[in-house]
Length: 191
Image (cartoon, rainbow, N blue to C red; front, side, top):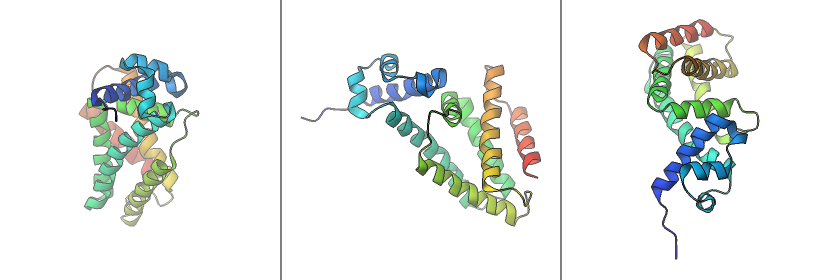
């Protein structure tokens, strides 16, 4: 007889995983700690995931998929380069203000050498970055010497670092003034 999956327990596992990875890093968030924090048995965890890496990767895929779908929509919509950049930044700020653990989770994993980013996520991200770069270069909106790696670094690292710094200093949401300053910094780096 097949076991019924309790979606609330699975959601608690995912939430606990994100919170513990943020708090303790990838290496410090054990299956035992995650299960205990989610108030489920370790066996329930293993019923759904082969291990911590698979769980973290599944969550990462969900979070990145949400972001990549938004990026893809923006790049395909026909907005100018700078309109697209602004909307991407606003999307990250919205996530940071409404679900800060997601942004912190992404930040921790992108800066944790013990965690290897899945190739599919990397390829999909760079596919969109390349399209955004093409738009920026074709419209002469950015410096012609900017590469895909530069654009990735400026967009992703700058946004994540800015948000991370904000949350280290403040317990409040990121305000419009701060968002405008982040956009100003990105503009300066790309021009």
